[in-house]
Image 1 (cartoon, rainbow, N blue to C red):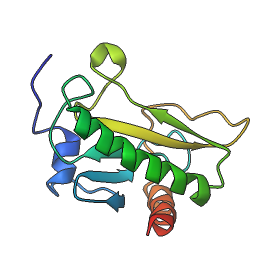
Image 2: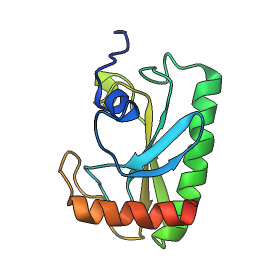
Image 3: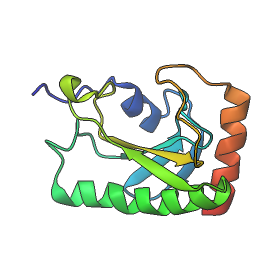
Length: 139
């Protein structure tokens, strides 16, 4: 497994070198909107400490992220009047990981509505509005 790359996009977001639409932050985790959303309210939760994925994070780091995932998922259900939530997490190239900083996707879902395609840039104003909606429930 390769070493952690301090120049990945999430490391840059944490350092304030790249913008993000923050929805939640605590001492250990940071949650923000995905700019390539597969549905309204699609967001990500990351740990503030640098590690690539579930294969090199400590059990405590992983647990901390998932505590925030649960909190944000519950808020997303309410904010987007969702019928369910998809949680996605990928590890290494073969596992579908693209950004090599541990992260978890939270995607609010409506019954009978398919997720949008991956890798398609979203409308930034819509993403910002969805982020504000989610952040309001989390505050």
